[in-house]
Amino acid sequence: MTVTVSVGCDFSAGHRVLGLSGSAAKCGNLHGHTYRAVFSFVHGTMEFDAIKAILRVMVAELFDHGFLVGRDDEFLSYLREHKLKHYVIEGPPSTEAIACELARRAIHALPLTQLVCVELRAGSDNVATAWSTEGTWHAD
Ligand SMILES: [Zn+2]
Image (tube, rainbow, N blue to C red; front, side, top):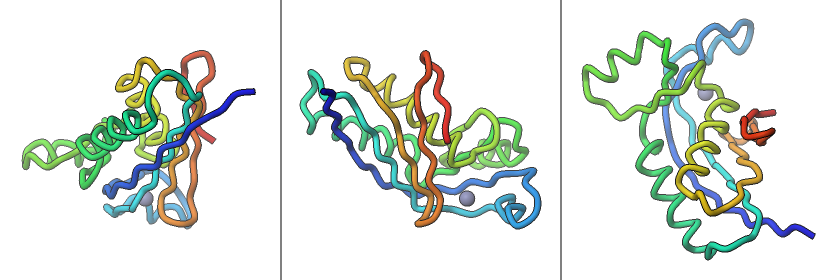
């Protein structure tokens, strides 16, 4: 039997996702969400409180009240020029892509743990979960 432990971290951030059509085209406007990330690990060697503390600092420093911007988004130069807090995501900063980036960061911050998945909620309706397959993270 495998036991997992999960840690939730809330943060607020702005983003925009360019190139969507139909009702999703509105995502191309600058806007923000209150996100809830839930990191699930195989219960192992680290104390639960230590995992929680490291993840919450990581999320606060890198993501909270920043702008999640795609590397190819022209808005990135504005953020850099005005020294605004931002985090560059490879490709469009969709909920799925952000979940995968949170997973990569969590593994880097907690190398002694075994991350199972990261569930990311953007508002009350949208949820993406990042899973690892042979070391590569993907979301569904
Ligand atoms: Zn959005």
